[in-house]
Length: 196
View 1: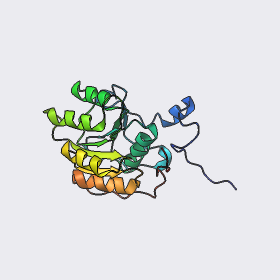
View 2: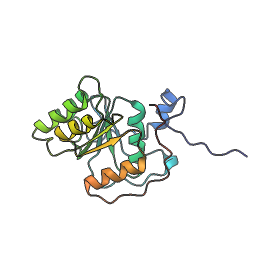
View 3: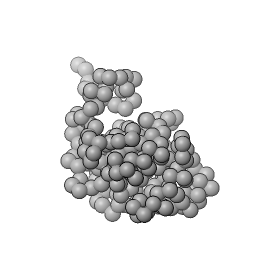
View 4: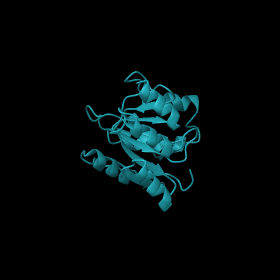
């Protein structure tokens, strides 16, 4: 008697064309498409039976050069009905926001070690842009030095979350910052491996 196996971000063939067909239900072209290399996630795999998206909620933006981290964060928030939009670097995210190719998020999860522009430069740029100043910035990074935490606060980050993270903790902290009820998160099936 075999057990049911659910698709996972860790599947060996996740990035194959057949996997793209399996996950195409995740991608939405709402709000003018993803633009500039970003992807909008509005729900999870039908096998995970996600709750409906929270009405009227702006997506959470994720900027991380790791595809694994982006997919884990996307899946984590999709399981609780919170939409996300993600980018592999800060420059493409900023371009999409300024050109209005991406919806303006209320909260940004930002890695520090990014190509083209590091996370500090992205945060500083957003704080200088009139339309992006009010966005809540949360550093989501593998760095844990005191200097990194202090620099993050200086450029305007409201919180600092160290990788690897527990999905339930990430959801709880983001919901607290957005002042929305904390949804129940299922067991940490999407936890990050020690090295990513």
